[in-house]
Structure formats: C-alpha cells, structure tokens
Length: 158
Image (cartoon, rainbow, N blue to C red; front, side, top):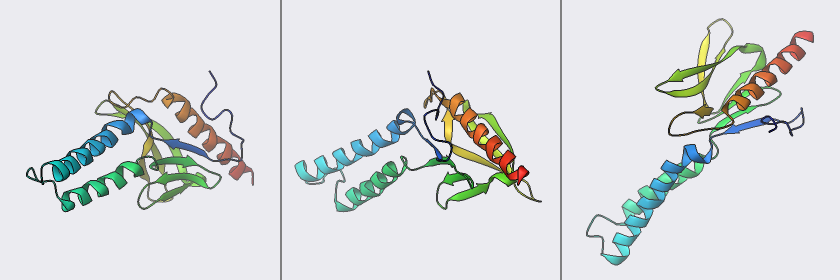
C-alpha cells in the first residue's frame, strides 16, 4: 500500500478532507429529514408539521451537509490552509509543532503556531475515532508533517 499522497507531485497541495464514514450520519439524517417533510407536505397535507418553512430549514441543512465535503485542511507552499468559515492560513514559518491529540476518544491534529503569542489550532481533518474512522489517518499526519519539514527546510535555507 502506498502512503497517502505518494502519487502527488511535490509542487501540488495536499488536500485532507473528512471521509465518507465521517460525513454520512449527518448527510443521511438531512436526506431523511427532507424525505419526511416532503412526504408529510404532499401526502398528509402537513398535519405533522411539514410545510414550506420546514422544507426551507431542510434546504439550509442540505447546504450544510454539502459543505462537509469542503471542510478540511490543505498543505500548500504558503502553509497550512484550514478550510472553514472564515478560512485560516498558517504560514510554515509560524508552525512550531504538529501534534496528534486524543479528546473524547477521537484522534485529531493540533497545530502549534504563532509569532510572539502562541496559539493552538485543532484541524477538522484529518481526524479519526470510533464513529468516524479514517484508515489513512497516520499516513495523512505523516504527509502533513513531511510537507512542514520540506517547507521549513526550504525557508530556513533562503
């Protein structure tokens, strides 16, 4: 088995997303909600609360479910890009440590960074735990640390 990102060229960004097993509970719940609201609206005249406002709430949840595909982390030439609202870019020269922490049985990556005032940022991906397994978690952490090491050396030599 090749390591995560082994087929990527060195100049390309490494994109780390949530896996399907980490997103599926929320996505399937939203789909189920929409099916129930529309079934109630169309078949039962909305007696159980199905109405256009409830379907709009379901639409908003659907947008959120689709956005779970976008959430994650990238390792680029500039630094670590945290894909969230608002996006966060952590330049490589500000990264002090990339650590794996366990919180409530879930392993996630924490980046220690900052100049002067030290900060810690917990990345939304990669992560792994009992209900959202990522079989490539260790490979993704290794790829993130390798990108940090490669860019840190390049910046120090310049």
